Every structure is written in structure tokens, then in C-alpha cells.
Image (cartoon, rainbow, N blue to C red; front, top):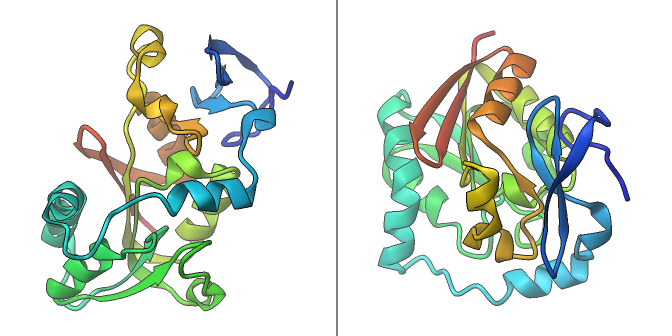
Length: 213
């Protein structure tokens, strides 16, 4: 069983929780809680699970959910900014909301919009809503996104946060088999230090990281 943290890449991870489906460990360095690799779905299984989602561009409930990230982001962005919706899924509603706000937005998703050319550009902002908890290699993906931000740019993340071991045990978020990485306030503080970023907790599950240089 691997104890290798996929975020900080240290090996000081200890058992955190175990249920009838999976085993979880927590990194002693960055506090990331992660699912052991032997419990990961393969890409075909993962895609099949996402295909069950029923989000659409016309879904008002989905729009309200995304607005918790979109509206604070729109309030921060200079006019006519250029950005990337990373992990947009089959219904890129976040990109649509941001375009309605006057911004130019590209979309990427490994399954639904796999355009590698988006990583050849630079952006004023990158948004990833309900994405980081799915990443097999969160360190590699977040550093790749960070490298595409212009100075002063914003990385906007939306993911639910680990509060405590007790609450984790009954947390609905871990019932999703595609969720394999679970961040906390401590984990994001570690990440901000790694990236030399300005960190802001905008909402209970919305996090901004600003690139200073």
C-alpha cells in the first residue's frame, strides 16, 4: 500500500480512515488526505461515472452552485480578462457565466474537451470548480496551471474541505468514487507557500491563489 503523498510527494503519510470501500491516508507534511492508488478507478470507469451527471447549461441549480465561485471571481477580474475553465465537464456553464461577464474563456477537460493547445497560452485567471479532488497528480496539474498564469493572475479553486477525522467518517464527499484527494485549510496554506502565492479563503469551499510575480 502506497504512502506516497500525491501533492507534496513526501512519504510521511499515516492511516486516516478506512471504510468498506476504500482506505485513506493523511500526509504529515501537507495534511492532504488521499485515497490509496489501488482504489482508484481506471479512466474508462471514471468517464462512465461522469457520464451519469445531469448538469446542463440551462440548469438553474447548477448555475447557483457555480455562482459561489463565479461571482467572487468576476468581482476581482479586470475588464476583458482571458481565462481557462479547467475541468469544465460536458456542460461548461462556468465558462458561459464568465463570458457573460465580458471575459474571454477557454475550456479544457481531459474527457470532454481535451485540447492540449490551452496549455500553450497564458491567462489572467484559471478556474477549476470541483476538480482538484479528482486529480491523480495534484502537484503536477496545479504547477502546470500555475505556470500558465500571468503575473497578478488568479487561480480559483472550488472543493469541499476536510474539517476533522470525525466528520470525515460520515462525509458524503468521500462516497464519490472519483474523489481521491481531499484538501484542508492547512493543505492550501502549504500549497500557497509552495507556489509563493497570496491565499484567500473566499467561501467555505472557494479558494483564491494569486500569483505575485
